[in-house]
Image (cartoon, rainbow over all chains, first blue to last red; front, side, top):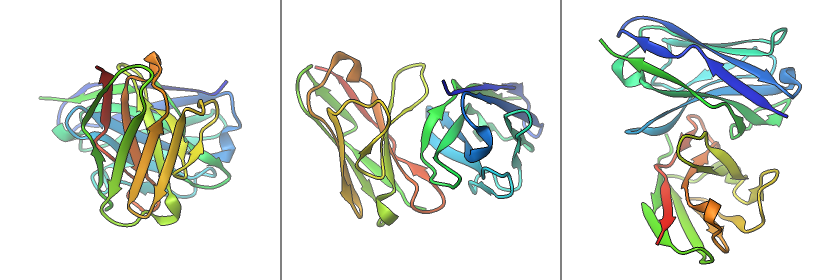
Length: 122
Length: 108
C-alpha cells in the first residue's frame, strides 16, 4: 500500500535552515509528481511546492519562493524540502503528498503522509 | 490567486441527515479542477472528490460533488457517525493551488 513518511521537523530559530524528508513506498515513485503542503491553525491548508515526476520542473507558492527548494531522489524514493531563511510564519505541520495523476501534473493529492511539525521560534 | 470561500463555517446535523456544503471561488475554476477533502483531528486530509464530481478510490457513494465555474457543492446523502469532520475544497485549475478555510460538520 502507498505510504509517505515525513521526517526532519523540529524547532528552529528565525533565519535558520531545516531540511524535511519524505520516504515513499508502495507505488512506482518515478511516475508521480510530488508535493509539500502545510497546515497551520490560523492560515489553514497551504500548498507549498511541487516537483514533477522526472524532477525537471519545480513550482513554489509565492510565500516560499526563493527560500525553499524541493528535490527528489528516485533511486531512494525520497522527496526533500530544503527550507532556508525561515520565518515565524513558516511554523506549520508539513505534509508530503502524492499528485493524483501519473506521468503528469494534476495537483490534487490522493495520498498524504502523517505530517511533520516545524516550529520557528526564537 | 483564486480565493475559495466555504459555507457554512459549521454545520450541525444528526446521523442519517443530508449535508450540503458549499465552496465558492473568486474566479472561474478551469476545467472544474476542484477537489474535496475530509480531515479528522490528528489526521492528514483524505481526498474524497476530484475534478468536481469524481469520487476518489474507496470513497462511499453517499459522497457526491457537483458544480462548475465558481460554485461547487459537496453533498453527503446520509451522514454516518464517521463523517463528522472538517471538509476542505481545493482548486488546482491555476497556480497557485488554493484551499478553502473549511466547513466543520459536527453532531447536533
